[in-house]
Length: 321
Image (cartoon, rainbow, N blue to C red; front, side):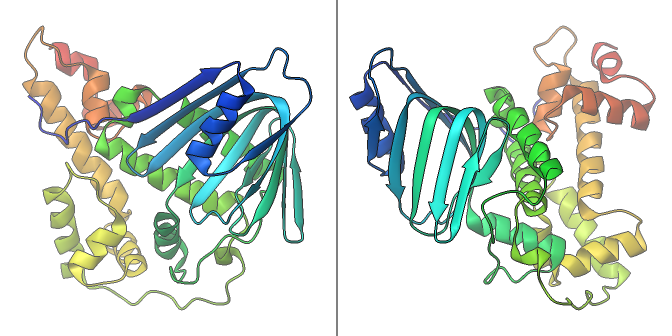
């Protein structure tokens, strides 16, 4: 019995070549940037894999030569995790050199990019979505929100982004294709980006506290979350449906029920997953991992832990019981 949101196709594109000219054309087609190559073309290797899962974009590239390019302003958020080689970016007064293990964002202005024997992982998000998360989390004005630097604020935050990058690129299509999983991954990536890279939420002056929201609005929000649990839902959407601000709704949930709106949503989805486990046909095609992903869990292990805490038994016992 399938009651959650249906899986969506993950759009993928792949180019693997030993011809430098084909590689340059692939980069031009993807980014619109013309690449100038340096050095010997002998033993050249290039590979590019791209994936688009809803709002989340993931790219992997390996390029064995030295190259340089001019890039125009990049309006959306994009972060590169360098796995091998060197990556340089010069934009205005900023000149960032990234070595293996390092990360950096794209520039919102025209810039110069260079690399040598590069292998890297890219995560892309719409700028509007990151600004919306900044508004919910920190009360930032979405119209004026922006990132202020190309490099992470610390070594620890750079490592946090590198771990997230590896995690996202390691997810299979049957996870990335689930709408609820996509929604949680976009929120996770945007929230992490706000903590890792310099942005206006870190430099803002005092932001007034959210106005008080009565319990009746919280109950209305809970009902909205119950009714839309099978759909990708954000706190901003719930708040708009209830006629209040996102930060005010967050504060009201903590005040009146002791947890956040998203915690309530996770509990509802866990209950729906339990219902699907109970209703599954004995010996049928349903799996614990499939049901978990349908209801927004990327990790079957974390789902199993949450399920055991709530129901006192592993989900596999319910499925096969």
